[in-house]
Image (tube, rainbow, N blue to C red; front, side):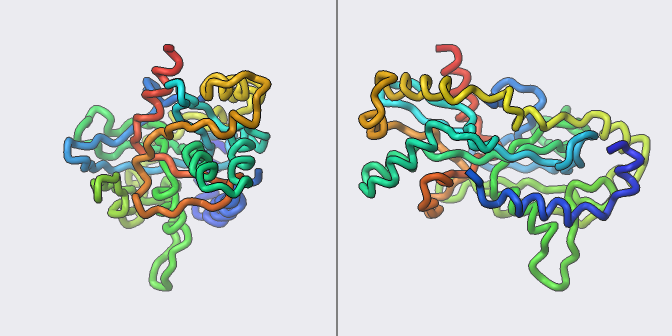
Amino acid sequence: MSFENLKSARGSSIDKLVKAAEAVSTPKADNSSYGDDRLWKPTRDKAGNGYAVIRFLPAKEGEDLPWVRYWDHGFKGPNGLWYIEKSLTSINQPDPVSEQNTVLWNTGRDEDKAIARERKRRLHYVSNILVISDPEHPENNGKVFLYQFGKRIFDKVMEAMQPQFADEQPCNPYDFWEGADFKIKIRKVDGWVNYDKSEFSSPSALFDSNEAELESVYGKLHSLSEFTDPKSYKSYDELKAKLNKVLGVDAGITADMATMTSAPVPTMEQTPSAPVVEEAPAMETSSSDEDDTLSYFNKLANES
């Protein structure tokens, strides 16, 4: 929609966003952030702590939602090669790793289930944001970036739109006029990255509703369509060939391939006590908001 239409529609989109999130909450059936200057990540100190303030931004003109969701897989095969690819399940197509995980899970053997867990999908959300305060990199303040985050932060977005208590008013964090700044507070808890202290401020108009500044930001939004554009995904056959290579098996071998062990990419947003989803087709974990690990190994894999 145009900026004028965005103004006239403000305050009326919470239901639409909630319904869209609910519609994809149950999954139906090579995005590399390394070196992508469109992507912003909060900086953490040596102790693992970090702080920044951002503002989630509305959908770009021509796009329906202010966020996009996709999955990928990241694990190392027994030969040291990495499999780091977007999952075709993101665009509702069969994916070789997800299919293999289903086979592994259905054997009922604990060792096969362990392999399936190692290769489970990683969930990512991407939104446009305005950096309000980046203490470690103040040059980012006032700039529009893409921000990749996991389910924990997305849950906080949903909680803002669907508050649990009667004395809380729903807030659309993506709204220019009635949204709210988001304070990212990162801690290390028992060795794991933790975002539980992150929170929204009280709702307030961005730039005190200065239309010139709002329109300027609106014109700088990045398209999110590439993250779910089928053209940005490798074909099933390409992914299957890559999987065979990583697992060190011939293309014609299927049974043995399913039992080859692999090492998963560390997921820093997980906690040691986080439950494992006990369903192979939907087996997944949530990506860390500033976890460079997958992107870094993606770069190494592409160079090798």
